[in-house]
Structures are given as C-alpha cells and as structure tokens.
Image 1 (cartoon, helix red, strand yellow):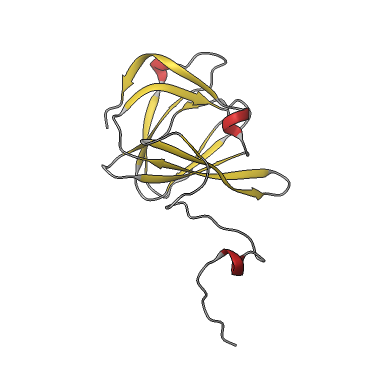
Image 2: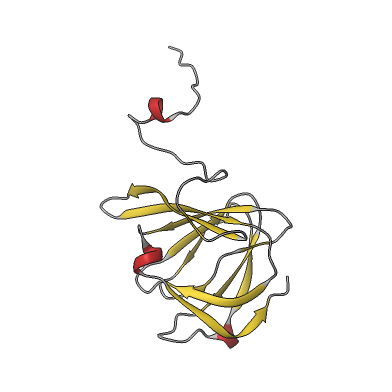
Length: 160
C-alpha cells in the first residue's frame, strides 16, 4: 500500500483535527509592535481540561522592565519557536511585585518553560535583533479572567 503526502489545508484535515501556523499568526490580537499577542488561536481538550494555544509575536525592543503580570489560578507554558529569548520572573506574592528579587533567564528556542501560578513575568524579549514567535498555552480567556498587570515603581534594565 502507498499513500501520497498531501498539503495541509482546512478542508482535507478537518475530519482529523485542526491546526494553526504559529510563525504567521492571524486573528484577534492584543497589543501592537513590539509585543503582539494573538490570543486563543486554537483550543484543545486535554482530557476534560481546555487549553488555549496563542502566539506572541515579539519584535526586538529595549531590555527594560516597567510592568509585570501574574495569573493567580493557572500555570503558563511558553515556547520560543524561532529564536532565543530572555524571560524575567519574580516569585509569587499576594500583592506587590518583588522588584528587588526579579531574575532574568535566557530561554533557547524550542525550550518550553512552565511558569507556576502567581509568578510575576512579562512578554519575552528576543535575544537577537529579529522577530521571534512564541507559543503560549493557557486556559481560554486567561488574559481577561485571570491576569493581574502592575507597573513597577522603578524601571529595571536587563543586561544580557
């Protein structure tokens, strides 16, 4: 028996599942350049738990932290797809961002990080001078239902 490889298209693949192109995201977007968050591009049922796949399109920008976000009720998975990134994090706290204890890490492309619930973080920074696409996995509509965003008291510079 022989089968021929077909080009991926919605019509032919729909009986088997769905797909999204994370390197050329389309659809609803939150934010503008340098950080475009293509939210809830695809949902997946993982044994009774819904996961939403989103894409963050990251354009190079100054390595400056002026705000951070946290999700009280869920972890967040981030996977830079086509370039290394820098991610800053701070331990979970009930109210204030632990500014003096923020840390920054280099995340190689293709490496998934899972941030614990409550961990302060922000959009990754591309390490090189090019656009990087990052897969983000969260419960659907987390950006609207479980996202605390706070400005820092002082701007923090990241040194690579």
